[in-house]
Amino acid sequence: MFEIPSDWSSDVPDAVAYLLVTHGSRDPRSHQGAIALSRQLSPSPMGTAVLELGPVPLHQQVIDFVRQIRLPSGGRLRILPLFLLPGVHVMEDIPAEVALAKQGLGERVHLELLSYLGSQQSGMVKLLQQPGPGILIAHGSNRPGATAPVEALAKWLGLQTAYWVQPESLVERIAAIAQVFEENAIQDTGPSPEPRAIAILPYFLFEGAITDAIAERLKLLEPQFPELQLRLRPTLSEIPGFVHLVQQHLSDSTAPVTGRTIAG
Image (cartoon, rainbow, N blue to C red):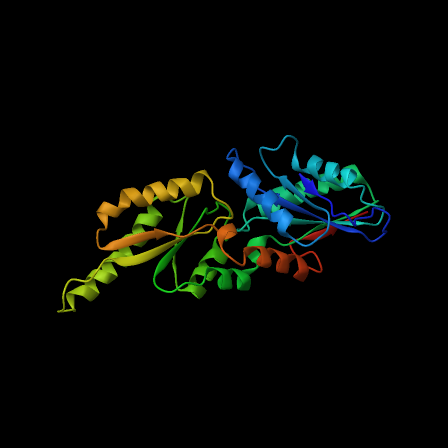
């Protein structure tokens, strides 16, 4: 899927196009969200592609996009991984696919692999700031060190962390917060406090099966923690300022960061 602005000309030697890469999902909301995002970014040929579950492998999607928009010789395709963690997909799979695309395209165009979106830490802090206690829940990764940026982000925001790949981590964090409230209540001789609100911030780009499952799990946990109000916040793409964050990331990435320029 791609958008071509009306004033686009394939005759410009230094033309620049962009490709947003998501993980890929059987849930259509992820694909729909990526397309909606691409249409809100500044004018330039803007395409979307998926790493997994696509009609063809990612490297072929890159090749097809370059050919469909007729990117001229010497033009640049800047590839932005819409990923939040530096896991195996970001650090290994996507670079390998981009290298294969370069083999198929030859030396006529330059492919620039930009830093993954989650590396925009300062922008994420501004986007996710909220008052009161909360838990930042991310997908998680098996790659060593991949969750370090999430831990740093949560620390800056004053939040606890939980990971979907560690099923018990969410209830453990909720229980820890409840324990703190209980200890404080023991010291309070006043009337019983009202239920305390706990924000659950999903560190996911778009709604999908996982965020649905998180919502269902919170419903099941509510009777276990009657002193708390577990409030699920919207995904990143639903927060005002998200499109600006992506646009800023594209603008700031004047050179590849993850990364590399892959050209002949």
